Length: 248
Image (cartoon, rainbow, N blue to C red; front, side, top):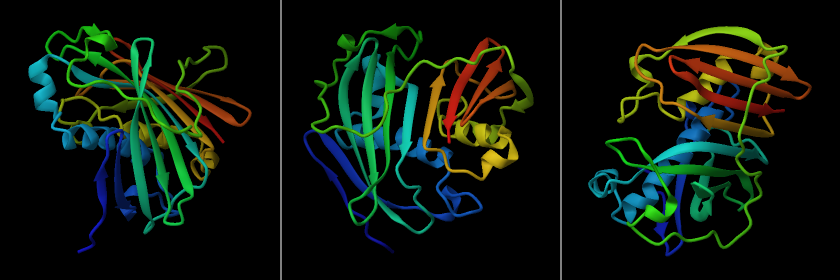
């Protein structure tokens, strides 16, 4: 059994992880869905290691929901590679609390960098709370520059948008909160892309999580190509569920 390192510092959390076939596409390249899953997972690992588990934060009446992510692919990692994944808190941006990430290979070269924006909510009422309401710990700021664009608000122009069909939310899509898992959206996007783009590795990927999707919901997918970019939107029962932008 391989012994991977993990380390908790005052301002960051570090862990080594091997990419397995399940993380990768048929060309053995890391899937965007797997990278999104690591963004969500490592945020949790950091706080869990500090004793700030989901259950503990729930008792405080303040939990996090992922709102936006931006990924920059410097080099797409492949199956069998061991990545050093580090995450830092990065202060606040308006109503959002930011967390950033680097995924480096064993030479120290950063393969993937990411920035994520989170909202603080009351778990019972789902009311959005201001970052200043967070009482569990003092927020820190990442001590280094992360080579990744900022997450941003996305929209899909209706003119020229194409219908991509419907995607039902299935049992296996759900996470422990009972809604569509944040990492799963990457696969939903890739399954709906034009065939030629599915084979490409994006230089950047952006996603907005707008509304929670639940079991049985039918997501209506719309897309629009703009040169080297492809935008996609998923509409649920109560409006836009997600918006994504792939930059190739």
